[in-house]
Length: 201
Image (tube, rainbow, N blue to C red):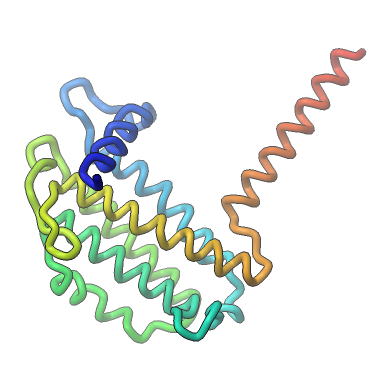
């Protein structure tokens, strides 16, 4: 099921991102994936930054991670899942995140999060037509292609995004993506009213 879903998502990525300027001689895996990675980066960094720092130790119930711990987990997971795309084991990727273990402040963790996206951008940029279907070991040693591993990385990112939405909402904070969509909707409504008034005159 995951393989079929992964192939469908990849097809939609390649068909939908005209701005990626995919060349006729190259089906453009790297361009399409990097473009989507940039969108994912924007969504996640904005929602993490939106939480006031005095709420970073908030946890809905004592059994789950605090918001601060969730951010560190996102950084570590980012390296791990992108590491699978590169053909690395979870243990190898964990060595890259050792330097983040003791980070505490909002600024420090946001910097670490952006570094994880820089790393992902670099690895996704190395995917070519020649190596896209190379087999790698993903999470729980599941065998998959490099492209499928990349799609699983996106799935994991959006799982975390959903968690962050809940954490923000429980603290009365509107997620930036929702706020931006609402502002755009109101702007379009005002624009429509202005056009109606012009027609009336």
